[in-house]
Image (tube, rainbow, N blue to C red; front, side, top):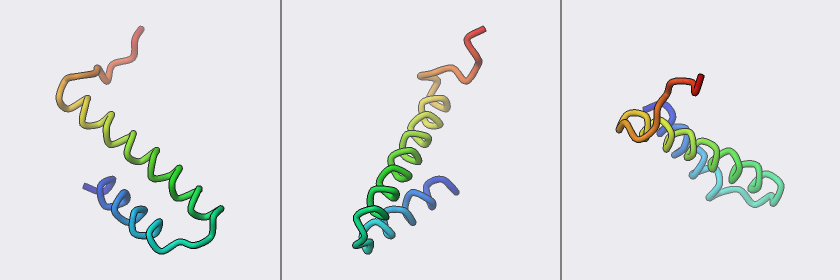
Length: 54
């Protein structure tokens, strides 16, 4: 839930940001947070293994 809240806060910040540098930083952080959430969901669904490959 905390990661989902963070994503929502980033989305809101991005919507009000006018500075191009700040917008790009927010976009990158949002992309990373969404990717992290996708990995967590995939691990929970058993689509990927959380175990190291060795």
